[in-house]
Image (cartoon, rainbow over all chains, first blue to last red; front, top):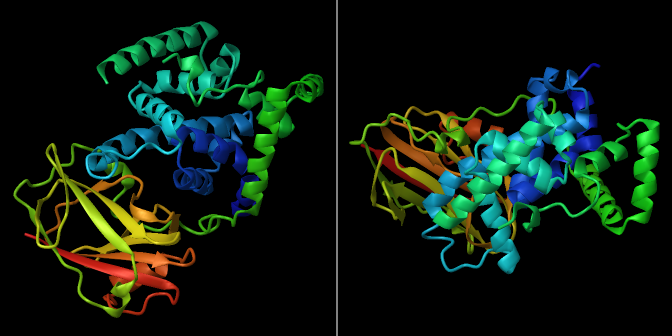
Length: 162
Length: 238
């Protein structure tokens, strides 16, 4: 498979929605989601081998999007601390209580270890079965169960200390 | 909160991965038929597929990213730097923000560029003339009465220009609002001297590389793109 810029542009047209839809959910920001879309496909221009060797383009895009968005949430956590006292206080999260709860989920995702957060995203936000999560993570279904169990424990603890 | 019942939790029977693979023709024929039959009789999965199709149409209508086929613009402050709390910066370095010089371009009605500074545990809005310690985290917010394509560029004391925001080669759309926080922030580096900032508010997603090059070539006061307004700041690193 030749993946030059033209081929990647074509891939963007045919598969870009796989990235954009999930980035919107994970990041909760249209602007950030569109940046994720651009950055993931721009990175492919620099390193086309990344997807060329993947067994499934959709699967690879799921992995790339999840990785990008979790990193973004972690970086944003630091940046948000800069502003939260001066811009956000007193302002309701967009979408009311449901929007606030969604923002809380993103905040907690940024606190979880990478493999745990990734398993949470795949299983709970994408609705994947343990077998599907195991396929993308490259681990056993038993390990997926362990990661999800650990996630709930960490989640409960983080909520208690918040 | 139960992880299975958050506002972000998936609520169709089949996973997003399986539906995406089905729609992109990645499933074998037997599995594809199984999924197709299920989707046709399952309201949540059918709705999920409709949602995916809607986003697919959106992406097809979007302009292609300029970077597809062109090298990405160079930038001096990677946004990941915000997370890099270990940057070794001299604590004695001080930045003094100066008010923007009055220029015709800075008279945009209602537009504004605000810089927030975090020093230790303290967060404050940077005001002209205020001393800011180096190593502080900074983040920008913009005010605009209408949606605008925004960018924030800088020229460091060595004359090197870079783009703080966005991490793209064109100005990014920002919704109308007061002090709309731009994504992420950064930490100032340790270069001493005067640093200039240019906040761009444009009616279209203008290319930033020509503007960056112009700034680097010392054309600080050069005309901006026709549909842009600019707000300029400068500060001195001591």
